[in-house]
Image (cartoon, rainbow, N blue to C red; front, side, top):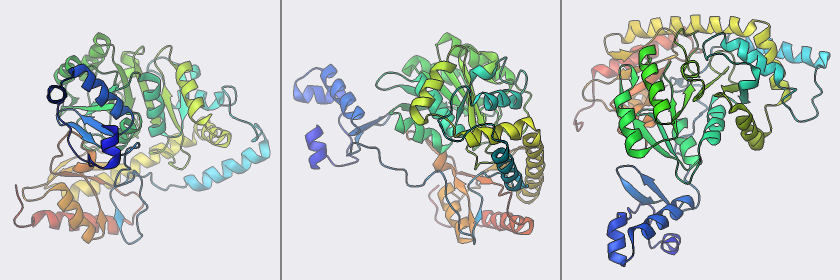
Length: 439
């Protein structure tokens, strides 16, 4: 199989026969074929997707995604794809902090960061999260990462084991989830959602059928759908985590406001991680993220982090600690929330006649397209108008289906008049769907 793939006899994209069919054809046991498929997957020669089968990828390494997670947008476009923090003077304040740190000399910027030199930043994170949001914890249970995405990867690397681990997540998920699973050679399985998030009955069904080591979820502010999971639903899922020995990673990065719903880390502290960052509420440039680990796993997670990147640069640790301890981070967060609320109000006033899901403190909304539009088609039409949006296709899992919808981020740094004008152009497009669309 390896020779046939590398020689091109089996071309990229070729669907391999089911295990039992190939075993019958070759006159060998199904277990032998299954082991061969498993070895080929570990070498990156094939990729197995639940419900679809095993396909030739053709190389040792998985191909790069067509669209990177971050894009620089030309100045003549309004960027409604990326979720960015508003500019409210963070740059000036951070520069001032850097100068003060240079004069003060609290740490020598010469050696590697350690658990001693990053302690102040970890203690600041505990202060930032607040009492009871993620359960009772201290600085020793905080592990720092280079943003929320990196912190999620760190948690996954701590949890996952075996040749083909299983990650469960929402049926629509932030593209970074797919990239993380691909890098870790994990099987990614989507769980059906309703208006309250992941359905516990579907989660239990998948756990019985496929197993699963971790549930990676965004219950407080789900991107792209804006769905919020209430406490009762979270308690049901926490009970399933205990029953099936499942760990939960709660990605809270899009939640700018102070939520009153306890995180999974508060409901099952022995099985849940709480992950977030300062990227959406203060500054994305700092790349300062964190994970509150379950009881007993922080040392292991810290070892994973040190093995991956040695630790957060000491200047970033010091800046983040000053931002939080001084109260300035909270001031920025509150101002960011006000700006988001204002942008949401404008967006709802313009697009309110259409099928949109929104919450006043989320920096994006979810637009279900009227009949005649598909997500990709509408995105191209918007781009012709100088507007970039994110179609649902980009949030679909490899074996999933995408609804006819788009996520619209509310570009907080664009001119208010241009922002409203772009929304009105989108509304006009929605009124005139393209002809001859296969529905």
